[in-house]
Amino acid sequence: MNNTYEKEYIATKILTVSCFCITFVLGMIGNGLVIWICGFRMKTVSAVWFLNLAIADLVFCLSLPVRIMDWLYISQNLKNGHIICGFLILFNFFMLALNSVVSVTFLTVINVHRCVSIMWPLWAKVHCTRRLAKIASVFLWVLPLTCVVLINFTFIHIDNSAIKKFFFLFIPELTYLLNMKNFYILTDHISPTLSINCVLTFLIPFIIIIICNGLIIYKLSTNRFKKPKAFFRTFRLIIAVVVCFFICWFPFNIWPLIAFKVNLFESVEDFIICNVCLCLVSISSCINPILYVLLGHTRGTKSRKSIKTRVENVINDFK
Image 1 (cartoon, rainbow, N blue to C red):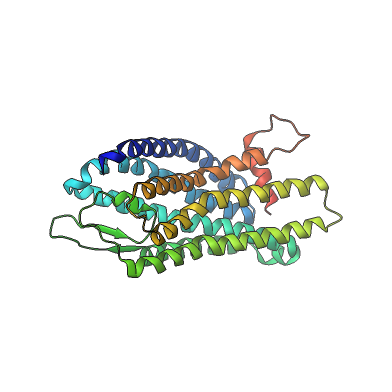
Image 2: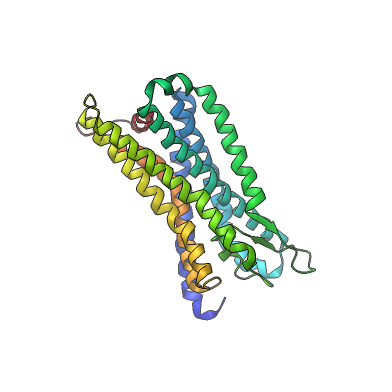
């Protein structure tokens, strides 16, 4: 990297590594708590969805130490052709791609399930069973995993050295390949791939979440038997979920398209913005348990209510 951008690189490195460290600690504790509550304490259908969402986020958090090694080790040794660098990059790309698909999928399913349960409660009670949720969860893990492998990864042998240089069509992780020799962008393939990725992993889920929560708000606002306090708690939860989803995932999905259109790939601006987007995505893997704790507290109740009870309150709201 050009010495002119050394300060920007160091500042970005400190920000990214610090974010990963904080996310790792909070994510391990928070998602571990949710897994314990949903896996061993609660027996509802919604608990199955929250359990799988927490597992997906926990798996991503477990990969963060390797991602930190990415910064501290790969940037210094990749140019020397160390084969371990290629495998670390491959692992990081795979975990990010898998998390971006699986987490968004289960978050969308949670909102769809809640919408169906509120709009058609009797039908949902009969047909939406824990057994069906478990079967669907397996499918929702296998399908994204297959898509990630088939769509987002392309292997290219660039030179005759011992190490294979990897080109991945999953952006913004391209910034980690800035120092690779003989790095080529396949312009004929990258634009449609970015567009498809943005539509499938952000636009469609976001529209579904908006529609589902809009229907929920309409249904609850017209239900004269629903207590105002319960309605406002639900409304607050809906707003928090939608806003956090948008903040964490919109920049990550839209910036690669912008960078590609205006020719900013491999620039210092692209490097900084891509890593800020990556930090937001990593934060999304630990933000859900924090929301459960904060939103599980209701005014008028004891402020010392246990964290476990607060998490259970939020999950019960999604029955």
